[in-house]
Image (cartoon, rainbow, N blue to C red; front, side, top):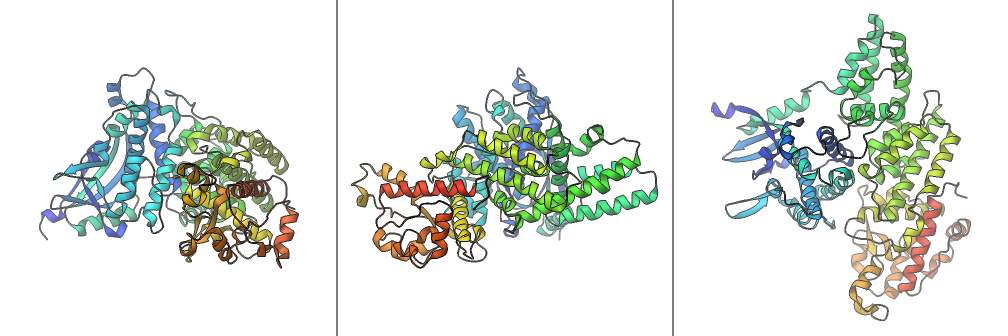
Length: 614
């Protein structure tokens, strides 16, 4: 290997330097894009909060040059023959590309003409291509770039599905207060003040060595490590420090079993849930407050706010109580929430449902932990967490059927105010507050009357149908549940399918225009869940033939056929007990869709009622 092959360069680069008309390939071993909602939401929140902390209305655009810089971390590339291959950092760079596509589409809506496109795609040798080149993602990125949406198709890989979901999450997380006069300032700041370190190796072997070193060893002290150092320094006795150190080490290890950044998310959730009093006002030029400071540098906030935490800086006893009583209790609760999110299990169902469709973790975890007190027994702790999770799921579902956003930027003030309102409340008080909050919501179940499938809500429609289908099965004594229909679990996944075949000609007696037919066909009353491939075999059949096949499917589908009501006592008892109005449909016309739409609304009202299910 030549001397040049051993060469390594490390340079700080702005986002403009990194992405503007530059081409990268992505190695096969890290092709999958796997960021979750919490990761993209954290990225957007950190970037926008850092910008808003520096921006003041009335600033000139050139003054952005003197705003604070934001360090986004390192990425590693292997450079060979003039082409750079991303070895480490493609998750972050792919997320930035999605963010830039969103910003480019947003500026079209706002009437802007800033230069963003060269950061996303550029021309080389007369051919335009995306700057981060992965062939499998090309179609999805093109649709997002041109139309702002992409409808996931059967056969799309997990990276594509994930990119579509993360793109939607960006729209939910991006704050309204940067959509006005400050928008071009934000673009300038993002392009020229956000810094990455580009580490370039000139052989694959060297690049992989750097990649392994960066992932095996921490490069900088994290907020968690700095908080640990401060807390341990408060103990005078060596035995106290050693005990605290052991507890801290074991605690962090238990969090890292879930993810390498879980420790930081835990401290953010704990401190916000129990001690944060303020949040940045929703207008440009406002300063970051407790909520934002905990989200970025919680170790500094902790040290500066000991009075809020009821800790005396010179009292080892206070720190013993904080560590071995308070932190220990909230850590256990946090870990139980994480476990509850993993699988659908008795007593924790609401946590699981909400994790599949609900508000961002940065808000939901502080909310679920807010009413807890370290004196609560395990059962009360579980009930409080599930009460909040049930409220949050109901909130998200009702917003969704009314086509309202519930991303962090849309509901942060509402949810943060609620954190303070339910903090430390008893179980009965908590239930009363949450019931009242739902009663005050302007988004009611009446929105179900117009609810339909569209290009960007297929994931929610599948969630909704999975909850309804699983609920009916469970209430009728069936063995399947929500997870059966929503998750793949190594089997054929269930897919959202239309009862009506896509044949406008067969419905001309009820619709004059094709778009009217298509609009009705996408209503929730015409949609069911069927195993992948099932509907393809008889999807184009007339309803009278298709309904015969429905007898083999789940009860929500089977209920269309008259035979579902014979020799099926559990289903009939469930129907009567819950006051539902299931009935068979010998034909399926426009009025039948209306009727099924009303049925689904009534099922939703039972599922998400605050009253116990009879």
